[in-house]
Image (cartoon, rainbow, N blue to C red; front, side):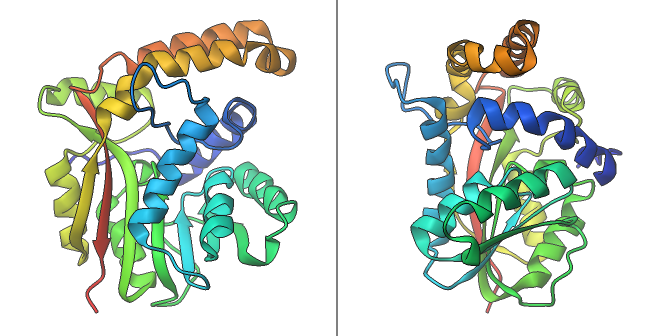
Length: 275
């Protein structure tokens, strides 16, 4: 598996810059959305929450469990999960802006005692062994400079029998290596793993894969809906960032989703630390 040279500091700066737009465009949910088909008119914010809930459901979270959101973004998924499951959620991000905005959301959420955010690198966490019952990662593992080392660190902070569930992109069979590397480079990532490569990385870190759900057509296959959502939000976005930015966002979304779900997949994977 190819390794990225993107430094966590640079990733943090990238998200520092994009955080205000992400917060305005999708209410702090930086991951993709899930639609059942072209006729599904669910607003993008609610469709994004479907991914969050699928991850939470796959983890089987219970009240009082300690959960790590590895790469928490602006905090919306962690707050939703804490509110709906009763779990205590700690989110980490390398972006100082994201960590600050996420904590402000937590402080205003009414459940601040059960959700907190810190600026930290999920490849070198400030927690002891076995500290968490569960780990979730929403499209964040793709940013890891060394996926194996990051998974090993997440394995370390999980208790024996603890669970991890992540949602992320995959490279599908029809996408050649050069095309995959070009796609990843355009968004400052390593070449995205294939599903077998994801499984191999989990296994090498000590995890046992228990379940996975392929949902690329309902996520990456819904590119036009993301573009439509940007147009729907044009007024709010243009007022804050300018109309030219909205046009640029729509163009960027078209380019991003251009490969289609037969080349870029989307998977939710659950695994367990043996206990």
